[in-house]
Image 1 (cartoon, rainbow, N blue to C red):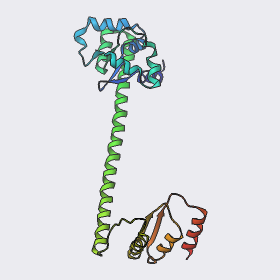
Image 2 (cartoon, one colour):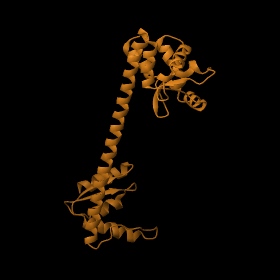
Image 3 (cartoon, one colour):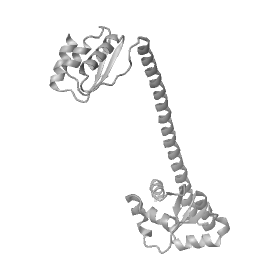
Image 4 (cartoon, rainbow, N blue to C red):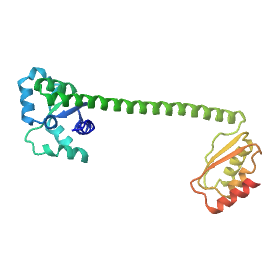
Length: 236
């Protein structure tokens, strides 16, 4: 097999069981060009070389769960679905020991490729974890900066003895209008409005802002009518 084909074949047969990356005895036998019974016979004859963290037999539940995973695993494991007994799983150290016990040219060559695949998978996993950690840190930093900005905003509003927030009900249309109008007139640099119900009334309120105050509106949909209102508002 070509080297890239070997790597692809190997990586598709590496699974995670009990928090460890493992390969099954049947997969190793196929890669080594031998039979599964010879793999397990070698382990039985050298039991002291294969402690539990090198090789272990899957429980019936683990074997069943492994076979019930996604389509890729089903295809990979289809050759072993009629096995009478659960397979033996080999960790990275177990594979290395197995190649030493078998001591064939093919076993040694394939084991080298398997070691490389284990290392490459660890590298990818570590790289993915680092990216996730970086994203979390970036989010935490953004959250901290945003909280500082909100604190500064509410602090500035409180200095003016003006409420920083309000709750209005259906019958308090005028109160809400006065509240938002006062906010707009007190703005000094910019206004950001997030509202999915923008109309000419909203634009009329925004026209009360100071000339140097920039306004940005975020809304879900801009209709042709609203676009016309915006053009007239901006031109004025």
